[in-house]
Amino acid sequence: MTDLSRRNFIRSASGLTTYFRIGSSFPSLNTVAGVSHNAKGSTTPPIIDTHIHLYDPRRPGGIPWPEKTNRVLYRPSLPPLYRSISEPFGIVGAVAIECSPLNADNDWLLRTGKSDTLIVGVIGDLDPALPEFPQQLDRLRKDPLFCGIRYGNLWGRDLETRLKEASFVDNLKLLARHQLLLESANPNPALIASLLKLTALVPDLRIILDHLPQAIPSKEPLARETYLRDLRALGQRANVFVKGSEVLRRIDGTVPIDLTNYHAWLDEIWDIFGEDRLIFGSDWPNSDQMATFADTFNVIQQYLSERGDTATEKFFWKNSIKAYRWKPRNVAQSRLFSTEI
Figure 1 (cartoon, helix red, strand yellow):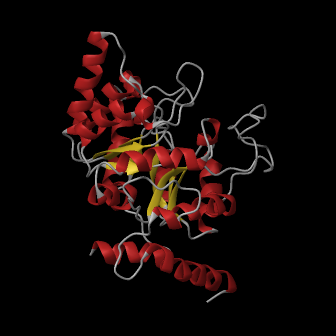
Figure 2 (cartoon, one colour):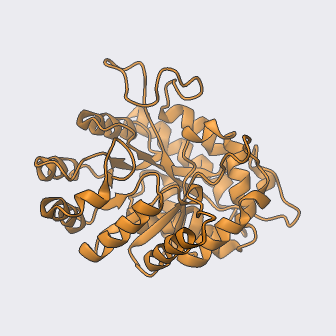
């Protein structure tokens, strides 16, 4: 065992006294630094954060996102920093989501993920519209951290148009054949409608809708009903999961951290998709533009406290295994699998 792996093992093993106590499944929120304890004395299980971004502006050639003008995000966002922020909240693993359209950056993200056992999976950025997609996918899928790709409203892409192309659909079928997933990006009603079409074209493809809490329905009755109709149809697709990320949003120029501002829409999402297909994602460090990590986490935990321990456990880690099929890399993560069995 190398010095690095030995240190990771010891660090993970020592963390088990926090995450798994004799006679109690989960640690009390009183023991989790930075998290408010609610009146009911609720608990939180170990957590897999399925949405973080890793990047380093100091790399040769720079990075396409975030922009240099972004004073909040334009700084190194790497595993040691995320570990220091997230571990006090009970987070034992994370999925890194590519935030660059450059093919070479998939390799950088995989290398960076391998440097810290906290990272259990990587979602890459490959364009199924490109003829070289099969070769690129065949190379990346051999890495055990690689879970799939992201495609949606970013980098000027248009899923609705591409679904009319047989080669594009064939490439998504290839993704499904390798048991990899497609993660959507930045949903709106048009993207939701396109994803619904995709489920008919490639029914065995696992799909994750990220940031759905941010995509609130229109107040216009027809537009609202059409959007909710499509969401309800997706809710009937067993291979579709929803990421509870980007819950906080700007309302009248501010970002409130009171759950009452988000409760109604979260209820609708929960009612449509149910507790077996909702998963946690912090969207760190992008979430820093809205609120602190603690404030973001607290709003989500307060909502889950109303849903009970079983639903909370599914949301925070169990459903992530079904959605991403990630493999444990340290003791704390392995214990989740032994608990599941």
